[in-house]
Length: 409
Image 1 (cartoon, one colour):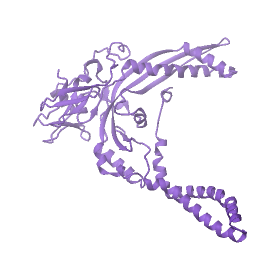
Image 2: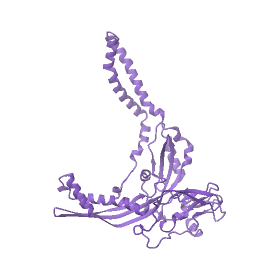
Image 3: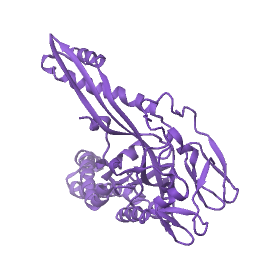
Image 4: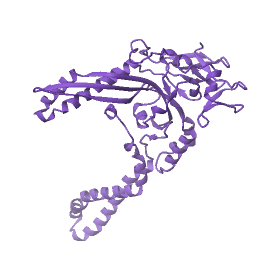
């Protein structure tokens, strides 16, 4: 089988792309649309070519684990013969010569094939409008963020994710009393490739509704960026299960907390509970989930906007502020301070015998107190004037971040 695959229109041979609104493949030239069932049949797509008893947990020692570092790979475009160069974990690409979208089919074959995919439901236009509405509502951000040219950097990504579930049991004996129990982890997401998206960005647009996922077919990836996992099943389990055992141990040990007399005593029984932990009913599934991303570089830093392509949930970085915003408070403070000094000078000069007496009086009565008062007033005035901007810039504090603990019952 060819290492790359492209989807050409059955009617005219032009390249096709996945149409989010129609939920079908559309031709860029003749505008014909074809439902996915027809595409699967026409292009002989497999919905699942794994063994019937395939299980990620049982086959972690057999399935490919990408321990090698990223490297560049080269493919020949089947349409024009041009060279397509991409990173080894990148599973989709666009020919730089004929602009055909291709799938690196070898990344989605056999045992390393994703179990499910969640197709995009929200379009790039929706993300573009949400970003524009947000950024236009901010008056005091650098002009680079309002430049319409940045919208050309919007990209749709299919992000590889492991979904992990299990039951963890533990027991402990304290002074002849036995304490036991278990915790259940349900669909904890483990980011399987951090090349295109940071973990904090991915987590902040959570959740994705795994129950709405569809059987994986490569055609729905056409026109988007996609990557295969580079954190394999074995590595995903090794990074997650120790934390599952730790949480279970803490919960079981806490049942006997009434007998704890010190932190050391507590720790000793937590360690004992940890020794008696076991994990069962383990389940690991491999998904591709949709995310819209917009990266804006500014002063040697990259600011990221993201949207969940399934639910429309938005995420923004805390943005920098314009020079006017940054200088406003110091300027207000200095102005108030100077006004205070001038008023103090005229109030004190008639009561002072000479210039030395006036300087001493000014220092004692004006310099330090005025500095404190000016700062407080400047802060209040600045907050009043820029209240809306401050609120908008700090919305990132309210965005959802989570840990394994949030998926434990």
